[in-house]
Structure formats: C-alpha cells, structure tokens
Length: 104
Image (cartoon, rainbow, N blue to C red; front, top):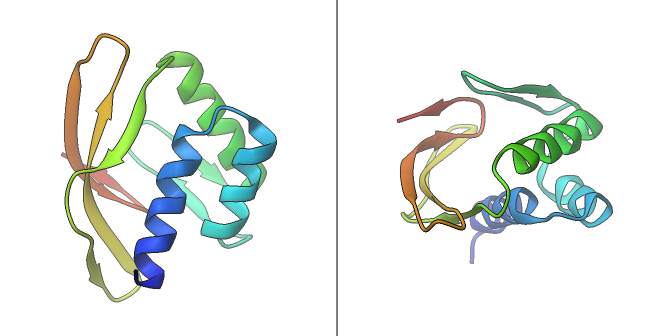
C-alpha cells in the first residue's frame, strides 16, 4: 500500500470516527498542522477546526459512513478519488472528491 493510499484511508477513517479524541489521532496522521479543508459548503483551517467540522457534519448526517469506491488519482500535490456515502436508510451517493475541493 502506498503512502498516498494510507493517507487517503486515514482521511476516510477521520470522517467515519465518532469519538473526537480518536478522530484527532487520524487527523494528526493525515493532515499537516496548517492544513485546510474547503468545499462548496464547508471550510476548516487547522486540525482543531477540522475535528469540529467533522463533528458538525456527523450531527447533520447521523450514521453516514464514507468509503472509497475508486482508485486514487495522484497528481502533483493532490489526490482525487470517488467516494461513496451510505446512511442508515441505505441511500447511496457518490462523487468526485479532492482534498482541497469537492466536485460531483
């Protein structure tokens, strides 16, 4: 497994982890201290803000889990992949995701 794959899988584990302390461990492994997250609906700068953002998303979409549904396209300093999200009602969604920007 490549380093990029490990980072992406750790990133997805961060989104799926409901315990903020354990989630912080995933964030520490997958994110730079000054890393930031930006998509059309969310933004967070720094690890603590990212943890808070995930808590907010999980409260809004309880029981949803993310998973990789494609390989990882690595180019320059970015990685892109397709994600699937499954909630308690078994509704699926998938989209193109970039660590700095999400796009469907």
